Length: 113
Length: 112
Image (tube, rainbow over all chains, first blue to last red; front, side):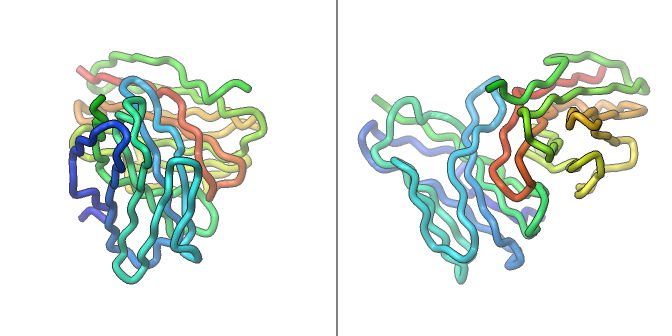
């Protein structure tokens, strides 16, 4: 029973355009969400987070949107660059404290030059 | 500033053996978590240690255990290895816990 879902296993986008990666969750107790990206042969790298008291958080080219009523979050990358090609994981936690994150299966983003 | 260091990077073990993996967190980080990544199950949380105490535990059998030392370094042990334990084991450290975690490169364990 997947509590965090990323229904698109892969996504291809042209360089310079917007990439939108989606994540859905089923547990309404989740209150903290993160996005990680992972290159082959490396550990995941933290990108951006959002707590359930917000509906948007921006950091440079990366913006995360949270829709609590729909139990949905999305990561927007604008503009997309070839170096953004990686696997992106969405993660969620219900703890106020602690690293017990539930990860989604990941979406492989390919940014085409 | 040095990142999270995991050793060894690769391991091959035989079914029934036990294995110990090591993780050195970023200096000053007190929380260390372990995850298992497999193609079929994705990234799954094993456990978290904070100030030498296990603070959270995922749904893994008791064959998976860990500990944390006073310098925050952590070890993970798997006993009576099974073929299904073949995976990439990732360690992550953070300041307090519910904050972004920094991952190491992982230890690739193959059980034959």
